[in-house]
Length: 271
Length: 271
Image: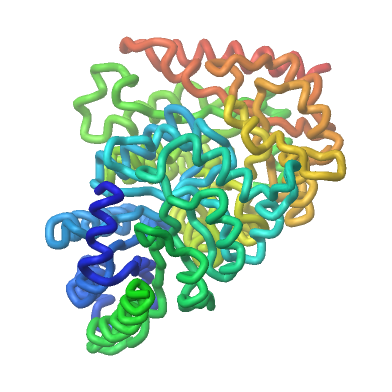
């Protein structure tokens, strides 16, 4: 999916919501836990109930891997289901891979060939060799820049000379390794004021914003500092939607929560 | 496995070799490619031929993931086989994971509970929250510090104040998040002279050195600058051993190559 297609979907759905599929056995409704593929059962009901309210979907690979082969199978089933039923949804494999050369090429193969994801999250620590192997036609790299956790201060906020901090150097250097049409950045919503700095360096790129909802970011503030002429934002919400209800009504309640966010987004897009 | 046990194995085997299992369909001998579990068939023969020459083994998760569920199954089979047949071998899941909170806990679950690996490689970009969840009793975190690829210069070599570069700040800060008994560092062998700097900051920690062999590092130089009183080095070799021969003799030739390295290591340990 290219940048214009993504923007078209945002306008059509009046939403820049990314649904994080952080599916966990201990959190899905009890009546699903005995299913042969409980993660897939849960994801399918959630997707069927919310697909028209979101433009992107972000399965978090860790949650599937931790169930071994059976989890990996359900990760693949989920990606396949979205591709078949809701081909307009932009799929981000949240894998935070960071490796080089033939290893990075293998990760790209996994998510772009073995599965048909649109994007994969990547860590910048190893530099350009860990980013360029993900440069497939029509596919995207989502690079970690400024994250929303307390430990982000340990390294990302370090001064690196030229009046820059590490996350700014990451943005500036890496923006030359791709284009606004094949790279996005992860920028934590708990630091919305930092978005001003981010937008100075990468005015045109899409930003994937985690941390609205469970992690306490504020959507209005994110929009104020982050929106650009093609929206330029994907705001993720996971637990606040997925686990809003733990009864048989879970998908219906998830839809209500997603709709609250979509309506707020429609208002912000209208401005 | 604790630090003393690892050191005991190094003395017993007179080796600090780590065998990297970067198993690839296009590189394993043709006669194995039709097997039901070709990666496992290959790994098993290699392990049976070389287990007494190495102290550690490092399957590279990317190579298995890129084959989907079937690859993931063979990764699990390989770990299980090593645990059962060669319990003295230290298993490092080379996954370069870097995420936080409940996601990092899931990755730890994957490699330490779902499978029984001894260690996992982790990227430091997200800071302390991406490291401490791997702190399981008896298990190890192997943190990326200075890698051997050209792109390492993009960020790892940036000055971060206090007369330090980023990799030095990573070493200094993160060494307070664990001990020399549960943390190791990845330090590329193509920069053996940098080992002097590394040893000033972390004199007691084990270092995992990739890049000897195919990537052109020099074992003697690595030992000169990197050895400490408990050896403190695991030197990885992958392709130079795995793919030294592509006929039915591949395991025998792999043994010859591994033995060359083990003999050189025995000499260096004797000094």
